[in-house]
Image (cartoon, rainbow, N blue to C red; front, side, top):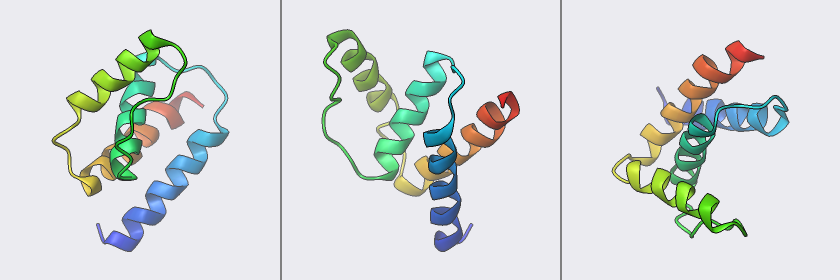
Length: 88
């Protein structure tokens, strides 16, 4: 996948998720969170006011730590396409 198309597809997937209102399983949301953070090179600590949520988010980032940026974008797009869109 060419970089420009990858970025466009990723932006579309993010926009879709930003407008998605149905509930989703927590494990799927955590994967999306980790892939999004890596894709955007945002390595800051999770910002929830709830320590347990921060722990889950940190764990998701640790599990995905060896994924490259482009691969994180591809994984995010794939999750949105295969797991979220089919539920909408």
